[in-house]
Length: 212
Image 1 (cartoon, rainbow, N blue to C red):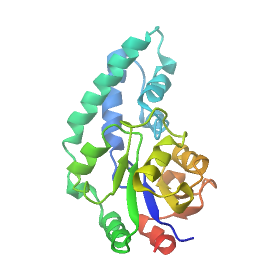
Image 2: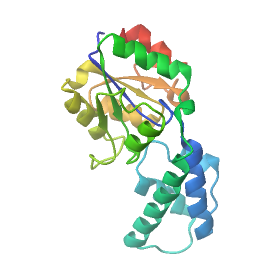
Image 3: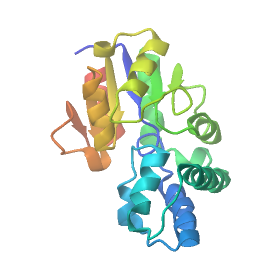
Image 4: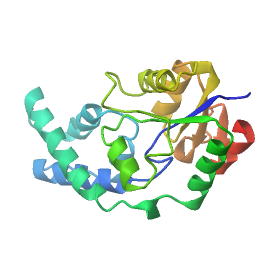
């Protein structure tokens, strides 16, 4: 298959900010007296902030109004953004940088498809904001993965049809979103071996054999 565009999930594919999400959610959980560990944190990957908070609240003994939930979610994001200041170009490994450069050399379009509202800020911190032709993120979508909206919007921003795109994802919800959007998908990390993706990758540069 000759693809005209590659749409990358950001966190877990281009860089890793899981530890910052964990630290921010842990701080919120401690304030509420809720048990939270890395196993629970892994359940939050690829889903929206509100869905993430609902998962955390499953062991919460009290009742919380929607407005209060929103306040805690905003607070979590403030903690998270404070931690993101620690990101730098060193957080992009050489395999990722090499892969992006090779795809760009061949004139294949690239986009980010992320549910995060912090995607552009993260790209700036890691020095990759100029690598991508478009960014579709939490600021321009109404539905989070596994809904395909974020990837459909990315393909529209690129001016490429969905079936001409390949998505790179590390979360099951992201693969489901790509499939629902009529796109091929390459799975990496925890999502590899799930049987849902078109291809499985051990490292990002494995993608080059199908893209260029």
